[in-house]
Length: 239
Image (cartoon, rainbow, N blue to C red):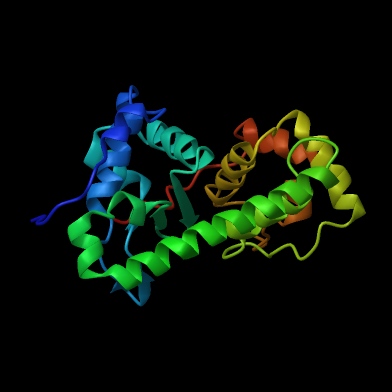
């Protein structure tokens, strides 16, 4: 079923998650099953290094529990190995440095221009993100910079819930107050993911009401969500 090769460098032995069976297993599955060329799936463009999947499918491939999958994905995102875009019925997982993993001599010789361009784009994007993060950190007195929280929310929830256009003074106050619970971008991402997993909060209720950014960053509502006051929807169970 799966033909061809993937490249792995010996420096993988120095990878911080190498001695964790769960992290290594899931990352290898993502690496082996990710696209090696541009394709389309149900009208969605899937680039090299990307994989369209769901929590249940990853659990089936790895024999890890759903909770373990969520935890490992969160860790891999926090250390920059992958990114994850959650859609209503699937997730798009992107290996951050896929072209670096696959930049063997033979591969580079067969597509030198495209690979170099892609690698340059990744380096440029990474530098831009770092520059923005540095500026935001200088402007933030506590926790994650409010602008990064807004960006994380829009990227995670913006396709289902209403997007947040700006971090105004009131919102900044709420975000900073939440820093006692959510100390990193990974914490915020996990919280936003829990929002998406709730059928009630995403509109499946008698009123058709959906949570918005201001509701989500309220401390009282955070406690309700984390206490499990809202049912979970197995949103990714499609495979």
